[in-house]
Image (cartoon, rainbow, N blue to C red; front, side):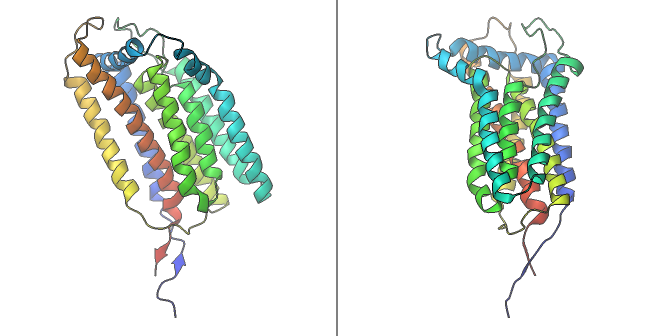
Length: 287
């Protein structure tokens, strides 16, 4: 007689916790880095540091061309993967829900950026609202769609690939001077919110496999990323805020590093939040 047997063990509280966490972090991002003077200054300082340091040579052109083509690249990659999965599974349900989740993320970003959210002008050169980042949302939505559509056995392989693609896109958007760190973080948060909802719908109408090993690394990494995020906000508030056009070289370097850490921490938190609801609510338990 076997000592253990596997059985689905729903933990629906994780869905709500993930959504609450994402909404809370989005509000913190907007209030501190957009509405408050100190946060907007720090965000702009990181943006300006990378804009000034990035080499003004022909090396910049291929990166900008990549960013211009990013929506097309994301659409093609996600479309090929979707087509393969639909043919393989002979079912449109998962594809439709995943597509609707990605479309909702893209639509929400445009609505928030152009119609709802505002950016106060503190004379930092930040006129016009760019929060959240549309490029980041597009990349993260395409990658999140692929993660939701991937079979359980391939998720451990696909997850780091899609996370790396979305993260590199966010970092490239910062260093090329297209978006501030908070814009990129907000793009990740909006996308993760809708991907979590898509995952909830999928698990209600077509439960995912529960044959998943218990792991603790994702919780530890996620908690560490949130702590790093909090430290970034604290440093952004406490560090000196000289005239935006007269920042010393050392302070510029500090804010440049904080900007990259900001983007990576946001990507980790949102990616692991999605992972927790895809794997967590139907995890195998020993009986």
